[in-house]
Amino acid sequence: MERRLLIIDDSLEFLKSLTNLLELYHYKVKTTTCGQEGIKLLSSHNFDLVLCDFHAPNVGGIELLERVKLTLNPDIPIILMARHISVDRTLNSIRLGAADLIRKPIDDFQIIKAISRQLDKKKVNPYQLQISSFLVGTHYSFEFTAHDFVSTNIVDFLTNHLSNIKNITPAIVNELSLCVEELISNAFIHGTFGLGSAYKELSNDQYNRFITQLLGRPSISEKKVFINITYRKSTSILTISVTDQGSGFNYKNIKIDETNLFRGIGLISVLCDKVAYSNGGRTVRIEKILERKPKPASVSSQG
Image (cartoon, rainbow, N blue to C red; front, side, top):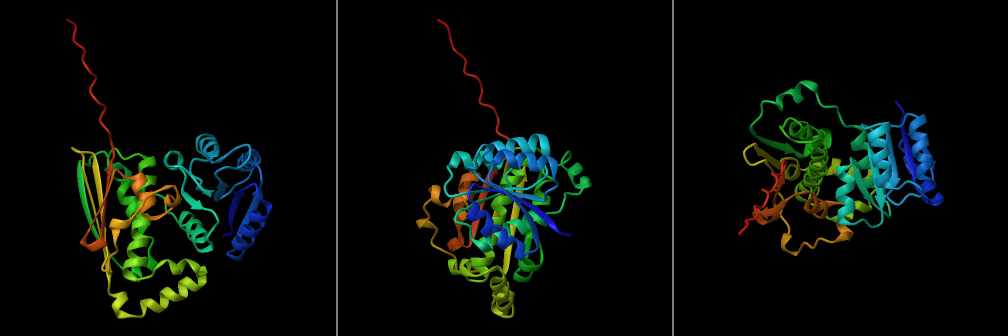
């Protein structure tokens, strides 16, 4: 079935370039240079996904999220694009329901991957949601092979398990989904496959062929990634750890600033309450507080 995408950006050249790319992957694309026009199109047409520049004219990314998610279609994935974005705006966008954040200039591989992941998402089984009313604590342990990474939507599989947890809101599920995607991708691409940043220069087809070749090597195909998810209602803290069998990395030199909030550790550090490393960088552990208790009111004394 043909998937319909709406792109909102003020650059005609960018719209033409991105449309040409997406049509190669058999997406049906509609474009506009005006955010207000984008709202009108969304109210009169059925789209499967929206790509919007954060600073789109008339109606920018934040306002678009608010209006679409609250009044038009709360389920449609909206991916925001920007050259620069602050920490506060990153958090606000994700909490309003942004499905992903893509940094400009657009990387072909990254945008195709982001769109495919959103369109392939499965709806949560309603029966699973009922479990949350009884759950007071849980611990999941998973292990995935390199073949699983290629053939299975691991992120959606794990996100569905997270959705069962009591007191977890859709906004937090969205934040954790982005974090899990980054952790899983880094563990397999850098840890299991041993790829540096050079893979980003490959087209989507070149990347897939290269990964297929690597899977033919037992030294790679036999490696696993281990994931542990722990939650206790008494503390309202959710912990996720991801461990790969790669060579690790020097996490002590990581610097977080506004240039790397779109992906990787930068995004994870913004969305989580704690990020820790161990095992030579092969294990990354994140913590997220699901329910913050209000601070007790101060009591003033009168003399």
